[in-house]
Length: 172
Image 1 (cartoon, rainbow, N blue to C red):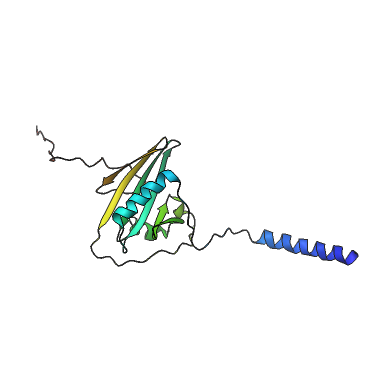
Image 2: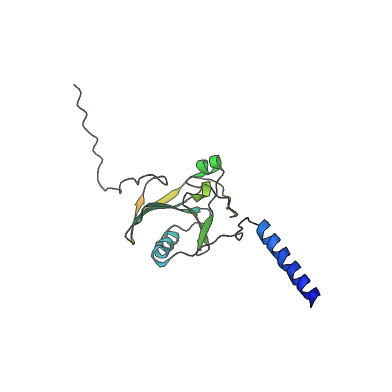
């Protein structure tokens, strides 16, 4: 009985020492998350409408207030933030997979946390891209196509049909 106590105490001490020395948090090789229903429908529509085997797909999430959020949904032949990602040595930490398409998700944390996500490499040919602006206001999502934009800054205005009228400049 005395030997049994010594073995049990020894095992507990070894377990305690090993658990305390391994303080690094590790995630799986593919940090895939599952979207909630409200955003899943939008992601699904975007992928179906813009499915192309050679595109990279990205979702940029910018929480503005507790009740509102701006998002940019992007697909193109290179990352929308390729230069910034290279400069800061950042990669997305999580992704979503829909219809075999991996959508990388950026929220700002990628600058401060390392990622084990494997990024797909693409060959750039004509720099085609598609962007959707998504607004979440009190849980109601609305989206529209935009000609250009950049994550984490105010959205450009909605595309307006009609002719552009330049401003009148009055010189004095």
